[in-house]
Image (tube, rainbow, N blue to C red; front, side, top):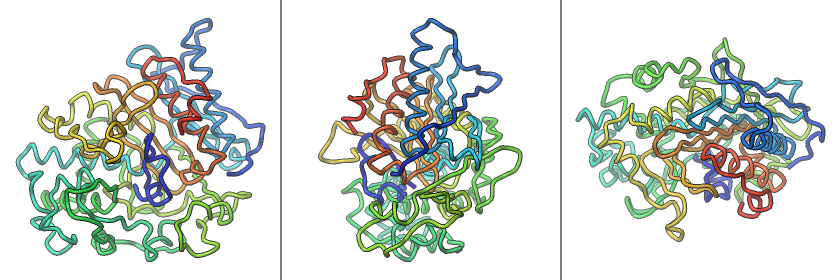
Length: 429
């Protein structure tokens, strides 16, 4: 699963999918725009806001046409109508006509829910941030006696990721059908440094936290998510996936990735030649919707919609899910890049992201076929969601600038600021 902040969007495949994971698209793309019944799209003529929404829709289409393939954008400025936009490349309509309320694999955004559950238990006195991991998971985590729960939450544990380990890579790309237990995944995670010394994004941290939650409560992770977050917030289209299937009753986004030939530049050195994702061929892409992401669990296994996830994140950031003390802990951040102390930062399952229009809070995610950036302002009164129906594909040179321009413009729209010019947005990628 990948994160795509201002600094991490430029990472190699290792960070892109491990947080986790350019082709010519038909020039004439069909477009769709829709709104939920409770939140009509703002289309009142003759206003500066309408002009900005129009520009945002054009950027969404441009991103779809240049490699994002499908884009869903949702912007809630805390007042007035909510903006909801869906755009897609023309050829993808044969598989699915994209809608703004389609279900989507939110990947590493799941980490924010996992962190919320841990901090709820901290508030209840059932877990301490200073607890050594060895206390909860004896013998399961390398160096667990020196790693604390807090280090797992903010990715300073010193654990490497397992996502691109040769033994696991076929499962990530759907080439191997294997049910991975969390304990097996942790066995793949080696130690890359001393605990507490370096920030390094690793899914192993949150796989371990999922086990800690189950050990501390005696309940399955999916039940904890349902009881403590999903049901109280009325998130009717959200759940933790346990296999490759999608729950019926709601449409879901079709995800794509480049085929083996076009994926090759993104793979790490030493990857087998001809390695590509499993799924039905779609020209120079592959339909990866059927890849099983259940291994992701606490680190990235949730399915949701733009509206549902905005409901969660705004509730969290406005203080409805955690007491003030734990909210302060969640917002206590470390630099993601020690050489750039003014860059993006990471708290406890929560990112502090710098954008051209200001600082936002939230998370990003990526699984094969699904990329996402979901943020709020500091108070949780405004929110923005940008979803793409490819994750690795937007990292190719032809797609990356338009994707970044769309994400920046959506954030600026949320914050009520002018959209960056295309030249500026592209140059800063």
